[in-house]
Length: 261
Image (tube, rainbow, N blue to C red; front, side, top):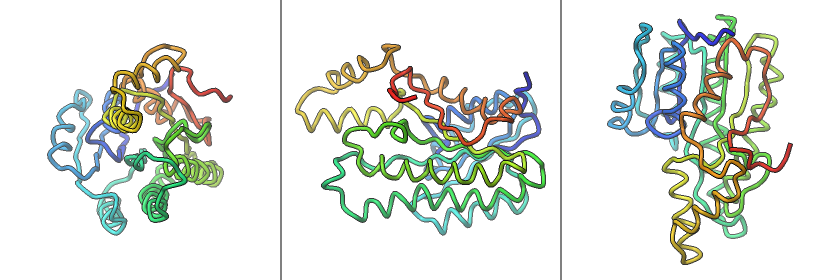
């Protein structure tokens, strides 16, 4: 099975921590050179030091705020002017938790811009290079909510579903060019995002975060939370040559929790 990404360059959004960094680490282990982008330059510099370089990979980073789409476009135009991106990992922090009935309309607009619009900007910039290379992977890190909406994540459920539909449409259009487009759906994985969700629910119910964590764990057939490296491995596989005939899918990495097929 050909898993080698030697000679390939991956652009990883949200690459300074969590699932983005875990994905970059696994891609680097397969030989890819990684470009990390996120808004915190200090965290990016630290993250870069954790990436494998034993296969002559070269890694770098750019700091950009994803709430400013014009800045995102400027950065990606700069990158693609001199570098072909073979693998794009679209990944942006999720919208704040809360019920949909009380969500401000502006929250939907902001989330749509950060997720759907930025994905479009980045993809449009890298697709010409992928076509020229005859190889491309566009992978979104989204959520299992695209299969089953999650309680108290009203805005996130809405926007994640929009991303999934966007990706499926793009997958069909790009399939003739050996460019695959897939979504990887994290379940409960030990990241800062999960801890934040625990804290929000604990405060709303006036219980400890330990109570919330135990409840969530009991809903997972594997009876444990996922590790970021386990998620990153799924992303790296979909980015590899071995996954060349897989496109347009939503892959849960959730310990079996998602109840739908």
